[in-house]
Amino acid sequence: MGRCPKCGAWDTMVEEIVEKTTPAAGHPRTGFGERSRPRRLPEVSGDVEERTPLPIEEFSRVLGGGIVPGSIVLIGGDPGIGKSTLLLQATLEMARQLTVLYVSGEESDRQIKMRATRILGPHSTPDPAGHPLPSPDVGRGEGEGGRGEELPKDLFLVTETNLDIILEHIEEIKPQLIVVDSIQTTYMPQLESSAGSVSQVRETASRLRELAKASGVTVFLIGHVTKEGAIAGPRVLEHIVDAVLYLEGDRFQAYRLLRTVKNRYGATSEVGVFEMRDRGLVEVPNPSEAFLAERMVNAPGSAIAVTMEGTRPLLVEIQGLTSPTTFGNPRRTPNGIDFNRLLLTVAVLTRRVGIHLAEQDVFVNVISGLKISEPAADLAVAAAIASSVKDIPVRADTVLIGEVGLSGELRMVSQMEARLREAAKLGFKTAIVPKRLRPRSGQPWPEEIEIVEARSLREALNKALVTKE
Ligand code: TYD
Ligand code: MG
Image (cartoon, rainbow, N blue to C red; front, side, top):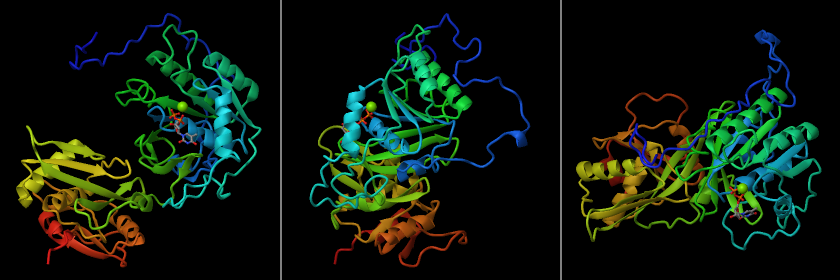
């Protein structure tokens, strides 16, 4: 069917073949299986949370502090974004303490070895001269020119897509960590549908989950995101696994963000920041600094927002550009913020501040490829647009934090203290923030940064834009 008879959407139906054989019948073949038996809670083993920390700090933090034995984690992302690279880097490090099996259905073991030598190897080149970022090596800091470390012995590679054979390998090698790259190429021969179909993906993932739960091995699944943005079709995998991480970023930019969407063992919306280099992904410990590195100070149309990604404040430059509409309806083009949020900001600027944008195309761009979903960046977006229309720069040493309401009022946002501290740390002198109407609670705001409170968007813009003498 081309069109869904229920919701009327086109091209959303997915073929799913009803399987004749029921693979779930009988005892699941996990290789480590034992019969279930109800136990009293105190009798259940494992009361202390055991985690194996990953040597890649950013990755570890996103997972909630390390890998949990018996957990199954899905890493999703667009093709070519760096999922295989990230997991190969992680397994190269992990294989120094655990036995690891890397199952690939996408690349040959030779290709994987080549990549591994490239990541660890002696041939890697030092940084291109003049790179602005502080860039310690992933894991240990052996300095420039490659670490030249030996390839770990306990990393097993196999190119295999048949799950039955994969399970045999698992039984034989008894790894503590398994990577399946990718779940879409893995199939169960008992099912009739082809690899990558909804039933295959669901069944193979369930089988691997049973294995993880029964035996305590940790399983990482790599999943490609389809055109519609869901992993393997209609989010079939998200409820099967314990954690879902997405590797995101602009393919044409070096930054990659690893974001938690779901995590049974930690906080969600944590984010790790990496940069893709010639030797794989390198952690970016000071993303704010990196994101602001190329900023042109005192250029109109640029404002600095402080957004929270999980528990971590990030400073990002927001650029706005307005230009007279030459044909038809004015265009609103957001990159990195929500389209409707942009429409709302434009409407508030027009109605409440009196900035006319009816005959202006408006473009907004979040530098770094970050996607901001929280409203705390509203004020910076509005200031970037206003600054561009008026051709007056926003004060260079100022950050803008606040949600914009429909009446043009400025609203308080969460975790202000952490945001202000990060701004102060990066040398910003002033923060324009919503006026506090309720008594202060929580931690005091830092004193190293001057706080300028504003009640409305209009007032905030007056204070943010450099006044012409
Ligand atoms: P890959 O991990 O194969 O992506 P995925 O598994 O998500 O499909 O990453 C492929 C891209 O990463 C490829 O375009 C080349 C780039 N890359 C580097 O820039 N440097 C490196 O050291 C490596 C290994 C890959
Ligand atoms: Mg890959």
